[in-house]
Length: 471
Image (cartoon, rainbow, N blue to C red; front, side, top):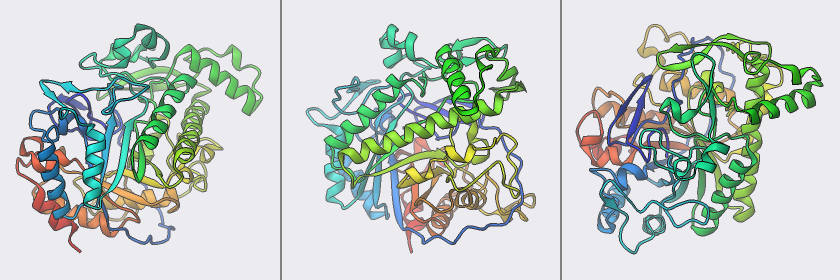
């Protein structure tokens, strides 16, 4: 489940608002980058015609207008998806609560919520997969990887187990530089991705799902830090010191002033706590965090392939590479070096940052191209650019550039949380993504198509999807 989930929380830019919709996948509060010019040196990819629909369990199963808690309605929705050109599903099976949508040996199963329940006597995930396979759909399952509790409702693994909470909850810096548990800020309960126990928990759930279900692929969501203000626990401090000693032979690292040698001061920028002044270790800290996530991705890929080598391994990320370092993620190819790139300048990059790129670990890359601006030429300010992380065309150009086309790309469209002028614009964007990616398009979310209450146009969107997927 992406930036939404087992709560009804939508994060739109810097504004959070609670609703009963599937919410948009974004980084917590990405800082808008300055677009830069450059020459596109990537090869033209072979386009894919795969059309994947994301199925957010919170809104589709337990939401007020959700339909997927009834087996007959599940079949009807799948039939309609097939009719409008969808070729596969991404089914959320573990949400931001830390609970799963199936019986798990490692996590609590959610069977009812807000007065609605899973179909009686039915394994929801198994039933969805069986029915989807009957319709020749490709099936991907996804998990919210490093979130174990909903901050808005105090519901989830972190809130069920005080010992778990005290050991693993992510520690963030507040605007005054105080180190505090993330749930005290009102946000979801991210855990520390560097902790072996949290990695092992995620890996066990991954292997369990791949073993249990007949799936074509596995997608990680929220496989990252919460934001630039994390993780500042004592555990992370000690791991960072070890990193500095091993990689840079920095024997003075033990004497660092933590966390001020990393971030000296903070400020509130449209609701996001960001560095106001940085310390001498700041860029190495960014490199350390990205290396943590890279190393986990190697383990996650191995976990999937060790169970079923034929299952594809992939990730959902935001399309805005220019600021995705804030969540500790480098989804570029290792052949792309942001430190030495003269076409697009990234002042946060440090020598060796390219070694943290994990594109080579992926069989599938899904990016959230959730923008109303389709073409660069649609805005005079971007008309002369090649890369622009906040338009569909510009972000796809940038993604191909930094991944070096090493992985099949699925551009993604948010059908419900974006202020589309009309359904024709949704169709046009779907068609453009299909014609300009090597994998295809991911549609977020199924609930936006059938429930007008959950999209900004307040209309069913089936015809918009059908028009967009037509060849």
